[in-house]
Figure 1: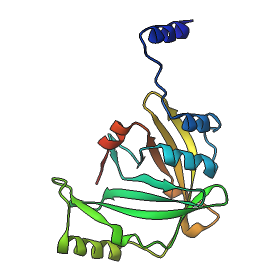
Figure 2 (figure 1 turned 180 degrees about the horizontal axis):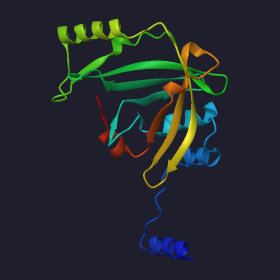
Figure 3 (figure 1 turned 60 degrees about the horizontal axis):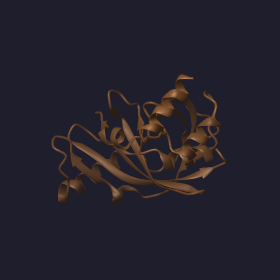
Length: 202
């Protein structure tokens, strides 16, 4: 009765209740169970709908984050950002392919030329020789030959905060067994303002 009265009051005021999630996302969430792996069709919907995926979020800061730029039935193109060190934040564009109705897997995509960087102190872009040297540093430090696979388990849905939490499980080199030590909590932000306010921790 109270809910009906509230909705009636909103309608009388010329307002309608605000949906916490887009309809396709809400429909997908309604069909999921906590603690269960997500089918890739559900992951695709969440990728398209969320403004940003924030990994290991603490006090509004992410260890790294993803923004999904394009999602098809076959794979996804996404922008990854993180703090490289105390000097630089880096951002680059990578690609993954969907497999077996459940996984997204890294592929042999050369993302290094897409790498951009910003000074953490003031957010100004890095360019010229400084950027070239940083790309060389990243290339030397990162293993570009191993391609892992990932799946996702639903943990929590916060309609008021417009967030969804998943555990990302990592399958090294696309193997059959996940490495529990690499389990990572990821918070999906659907509100543009809260997503834009996120930073990267170092």
